[in-house]
Length: 411
Image (cartoon, rainbow, N blue to C red; front, side, top):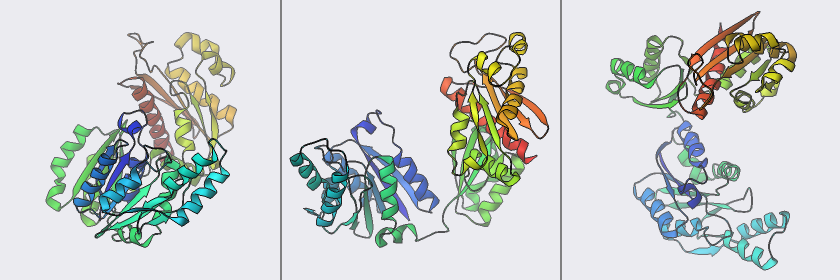
């Protein structure tokens, strides 16, 4: 099955708001075996939205999903645009109106009764024959059949979008698309410390096209995500070839993020983890706590940005800081050991480095990072020279630390 996504909003088009919905729905659909052929971003313009929806439908896809533009204001035009694209008239849906009225009654009053009533009727105006999707906020969504396909209209706020999407999946017209080929989801291979040029060399030797495979590559700081379609013996053989070309690089064949893998390893051991971060400023803790159930194995962390905090909270000796400096293997090791002891956990990660753009010097340039791992009766430290701007160095350092811990836990 094939799908197209239409993301609406002038604020997204102009870059003032980053689109989350397209990425979330794209991952969801791909994981369900639906091929996402395009994601189109358009502004709050009736003609542009209707044209994007019409072009997607005209391409023959089975599913078109729109996000955004369902509010009460003048520039919320998506329902009208979908009606135009599908050749349907618009009418107030009484069931939707009751839902909107209840949602507005429960919200703090910020407008006059007349304005709320007018906005409520606008949000409850749907294409004729549409199936209403109850709102997560105040804006209902809709499922609109068209020819052999279907259009799903979702609100823009990401949490509302995902909540209404889950409801849409229970509508038979949508379920037929999503459930048509449950075994078609690609194999998602996650690899660490493999650069794209090295991967392309391996591709040349493995020749996936000759075996009818379509391989996609997405590079992230310190990682590659490789998708292989279709699943089956051919894909399995390709993944086996990758494992030979890059020993130890594959850390998941089901698309699991490194923080998820680390969590599983800690849970299997019955171990707990603590963090001590300097240049990453809490990014590692944020990654770990993004995993559901992380409270079972993540004890907590210390953002020890200043030397005084490294000393007073983590117990890093002042003499060590004076002699070697905060960005050093010695301090990284002491930070990890201190975090493990002070937080009372089985393992601890530490990161200290120079993220830039200032603060570097010939002996310690921007991008110099040390990662300490304390656990299993030892303390180990890894040095890396990372490249990029401040944001990329911090992200890469976080990923590097997670993989260092994963490797230690797998040993």
